[in-house]
Image (tube, rainbow, N blue to C red; front, side, top):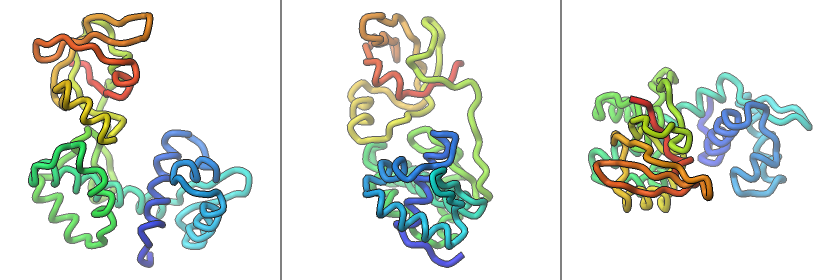
Length: 221
């Protein structure tokens, strides 16, 4: 595989995420929305990726990653999540600060550097946001019995294991409420009026909006 541009890697990663979300071939409009660009730009990129055998494209049906394309996506995701982990664990960045920096670092091509980074971090399985880190072979560990906080039954203790929104604004919101990964959480009540949730965490009662509790992933203890 010839060296890919940053833009090509970003498109491949976007197609990977959209495939997982949509469970079907990715259409041009979906990809344009994801990449915040024009459909004409997407069409040109789809042609380039198809010529490099990284995607299969069928007009009016959309595109899918080939086996080689999936390998590229997982490799890029692995680097991104390892760099996020490094920035938090070794350089003391906040979890709300690292996404944009990792977006730049994920395009470093050195396999040796990536493997050394993995070794330095003692082969982490999850990044600071709770997302699984693919290993060097592209294998991913998936947790069992996970759900969104908004679906957690009242009175059922669970552990906060991830977030589905890694934007700085949402992570700062969690920091303000002192909600972190690994904490035990218990739903005390849920209100029909606005679907907000009253939770107990570290002996404190907090009220979270439906929007917030739908973005927090938990695992029943």
